[in-house]
Length: 173
Image 1 (cartoon, rainbow, N blue to C red):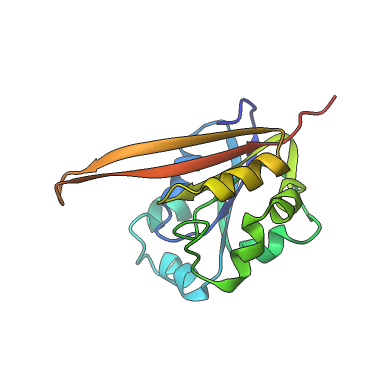
Image 2: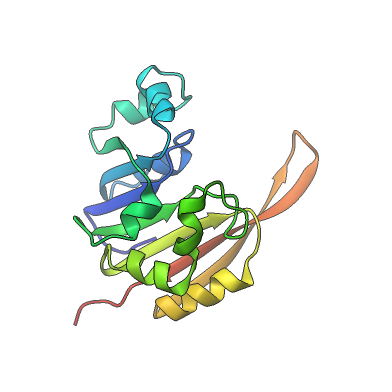
């Protein structure tokens, strides 16, 4: 994670709130803004239907906002973040909607990088490895890490590997 303090975090995709909760688990995080495309998902949170709703709603550092995180990251920034965490699509190749296609290109990633503070980090979750996305990330960011995350699903009796992609923006000075 980012080495700083008072971190401003943008989470792309609220879903069940797991990524937002993980970010809020650090006392170095000052704020988490989760951008969710589907208004009904935010409604589920508001009505307590999301398992983590109470925990998220009672943390003053958290807020959920409606919107398309991919469109937002393709425009000039209104605010900059120390961490941008994207957990929306299944993988760069298996997208849930059409608005994310350009995000996974070097050009789209360069636009997203503009939303980061100096030394900020972009993190993207994927259920599958993607060489083309890793290459696009390397063209957009000066420092890149690709990390496999193996885990066992004990209830299903299976094992699998998810992937985390990190791009670190240039530090100031």
